[in-house]
Length: 258
Ligand code: F6R
Image 1: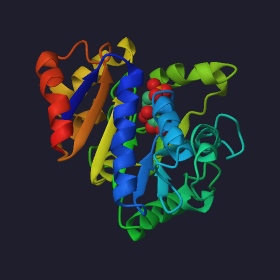
Image 2: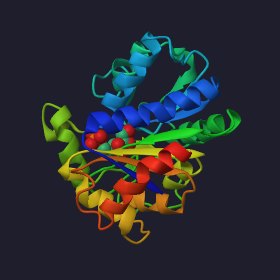
Image 3: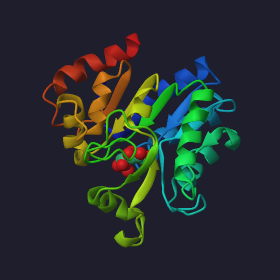
Image 4: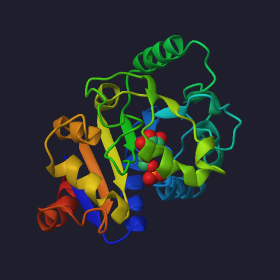
C-alpha cells in the first residue's frame, strides 16, 4: 500500500487521473472499476479534460461500477447509474454499452450479482479499481462487519452511511436501506487499486485503513494485503497518520518509480 499525500484534493485528483490516463494510453482496451460519491468527481473532470484535449480516449475501455442502491431505477437522479452518466460517461467518449452498473431494480438480485461477477471475469478482470472511503472505513458498500472475502451481493447500509448520504436526498427517510455492492474480495482482485480520500471527515478512516489492524470493521484495511494499492489523500485526510511525514517524503518517489 502506498500513500500519496498532496496539499489539496485538486492536486491528488490530478495525480490519480494521471495514473488512470497512463493505463488507458498503455492499454486502450483496459477494464476499469469505478466509484461514485463526491470524492472522485474532480478526478473524473480531469480525465474528461484529457479526453477533450485528445490526450486519451475511452472508446474501447470497459467499466464496472462498485455499487448501486437497491430499489432505485437507473433514471432516478440519486441512482449511481445516473451519477456516472452525469459526472463521467457523458463527459468522455466511452461507449455506454461498455459501461456496467448493477441494476438496482433487479427482482432476482442473486442472479444479477452472479451475472455481474461473471461478466467481469469474462472481460479478464478489473485492471484498475477506483475507490472512495466511507467515514467508517467502508469501500463500496462493504460496511463494518463485511467479510474481507465477500463477493458482490445485497447489503444493508449502516445508519451512519444513511446519515452521510442523506445530503443527496430530500430527507433521510428517502435514502435506500439496501444496496447491491461488489464485495471486498471482489475489489481486492483488481490488479491496481486507486483510493481517494479528502477532508478531515476521512482522517479516522484513512488512519484505520493504513495503520490499523486488518479487520472487517474497517473494510478498506483489506487493501494492506494488496500488492498495488495507492491511497491519494489531501493533507486533512492524512492528518492522523503516524507516519505521514515518511509517506509524504517517499510517496511521490514511489509513484515516479512505478
Ligand atoms: C461509492 C462507494 C462508496 C463511497 C464512500 C465515500 O460508489 O462505493 O464507498 O466511495 O461512501 O463517499 P464520498 O466520496 O461521497 O465521501
